[in-house]
Length: 463
Image (cartoon, rainbow, N blue to C red; front, side):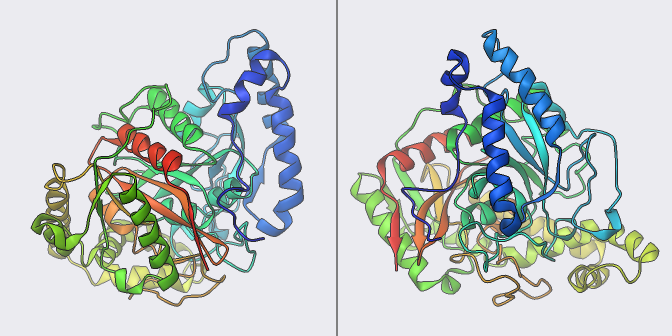
C-alpha cells in the first residue's frame, strides 16, 4: 500500500489511557487488537522472532486490574512492546539474528527489559535483527511495500511499529540502526544521548545506544523516560534528563541543515521533498541555515566528511575479539558480510584506533561549537525511500548495505548526539524520515522541537 502521511498504519497508546481509567477499554483488549493485527500481517512483514502471548496476556490482565483500581504504575502500564532480539529477556531466547544463537537462553532480563516490566509494560516478543546487529539482513519486509527492506539492524522493531502491530518497540543503534529503519517504516524514534539509557549487557561499543521506536512522539518519550527513571544511564553516565510529563511543543528559533558527506547521493525526489519541507519551516518564521551561511557550519560539515568510514573502522576494531572467538568456534557459519568486517579490523593497529578516536573527538568539538547558532540540526534520515530487499547499491567500502545505507545517520552516532526522526515526508508513496540532532543531553528539548514541527508543518509528498 502507498504511504499517506495523514493516515499512517502505526498505532498509539497514550490516548487510550483515559478509556482504560473509565473502564470503556482495557489493556487486555488493547493487546488482543495488537495480536489480531500481528496474525493478519506477520506472514508478510515477518517482524517477530518469538512471541510470548501467554505471558503478555497475563501482564495485560494485571495492568487491567491496576487501571480498574485507578492505580496504574506509569504512563506505559499495559503497553505492548517488542524487544530487539539482541537484548536479553528471561522468558524468551536471544537469537541475535544468527543460527549460532538459536538456543541462546540467558534466563535474565536486560536492564531496559527489567525497567519496562517494572513500569507495567507488556513485553510481547522479540523482534528481528540483522545478523548480530550488523549488515546481513533477516527476513523482515517493509510494512508499506513487502518488496522493500524495513532497514536494519532494528528491522523488526521498526516494521512492527510501522505496521501497527504494537505502539512501541526497543531498538539499538551503533551507526544507523534506529533512525534509518524508523524513517523507512514511518515511525517516530529517539536515539538518545550516548549513555542516557542503560544498555545492560550490550556495552561493547563506544557509540552504541538503546532507543525507542513508536507510533507517536508521546509514546516514544514515555517509554524512554520510564526506562531511564528505573534503569538509569550507562555506568558513569547521568542518564536521560527530563520528566514523565510529555514535553510541550516548542517552536525553534533557528535550525541548521546538516548535509553530510552523502548529500550528492540523496535521491533527487527526496531532496526536492526535503527542500519543500525546509521552505515550509522557514515560512512559519523559523530561520534555517545551510553550510555556506556560517564558517562554523562549514567547519562542522568538513569534520564529518568521512564519518561513515570512521564509524565502520571504530566499530570493527571494537568488535574484533567477539568475531575472532566466533570464527574460531564456527569458521563456516558467519556471513560473508561479517567475515569481511573482521578482515578489515585485522588490518588495524591500536594507533589506527587512537587516530580515529581523535578524529571523532574533533567532530564532537565542531558540533558543540554550533550550540549558539541553532536549536538543532535537521536532515533526512536516509538517502531516500527504502531500497528493494537485497539491493546492495550504494554500499560503502567494507560494508554491504542490503538494508539501506546508514550514511545519513553516522554523524549522530559518532557525535553521541540525541536524535529524533519523524515521518514528515513521502516519496513516491514510501515514507522518508526527517531527523533532528541536538546537543548532548538536550533530548527532552529535542522532542519539544519535534512536536512543534509535527503540529505546525504539513507533511510533504512528492512523486
